[in-house]
Length: 293
Ligand SMILES: C[S@@+](CC[C@H](N)C(=O)[O-])C[C@H]1O[C@@H](n2cnc3c(N)ncnc32)[C@H](O)[C@@H]1O
Image (tube, rainbow, N blue to C red):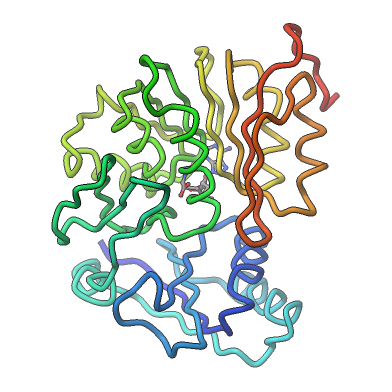
């Protein structure tokens, strides 16, 4: 299947900020590619931001990207879009992804690289979904997952906004039961395609397409999603979670407004990566109040 890819080259120091602005503006996953993530990438002082879409980018979409470029002072950066055949994508720069250590003893690698001897070895075919392990928010979530779930008896886990399935697969490798929910059906398809690469079936790791939090209850809930969505979902995530909520995807200056909506839960652990924050929340009280109302 062919798809559109939109590329923007940006100075390294602006990449995180710009990718976040564009993700929020377009409600789309933005991937950052640089010499850390690719064996062959753009110039050393430049990063490539990549957004993929099944539809041709509309003028409104491009205008949205331009507004973000103006905001970070890069109004002149060219925006290149092109239609890609999946096969050219597979054989193109995608082949240059490196294995990445997303958390201590957790390696995420493309299918064509050799198995690692890391305790947790997860294979992700970097398709069209967010989640090759290179983004700071994914790495924060992965570290908090290892801290919460390594070496303990089996827990039931919800991964809301599972993207390529990366965090769910780490959870499954750590020996737990996991349901991954993803609003974008293309991403859900990628997640399902990543299952056999890791020796799992869709019965063992349950990936579903939805924007709703499921009704079941879970010991642990994970959500690495942009701040406004963490706020929108706060009542549902608190309702279904029995023990701990792991949140990532918020910037330091969004932390307070997000955490305000998680009333009845307190910060047990907090980690930062650049301007991003990840937290583990635990209950402070039994009754969950509706802090959004
Ligand atoms: C920042 S990405 C994280 C992907 C992956 N979990 C990771 O850590 O790399 C957030 C994902 O949440 C999805 N998403 C946004 N709103 C959602 C909702 N209400 N329910 C489920 N998924 C949602 C997006 O499509 C995107 O794939």
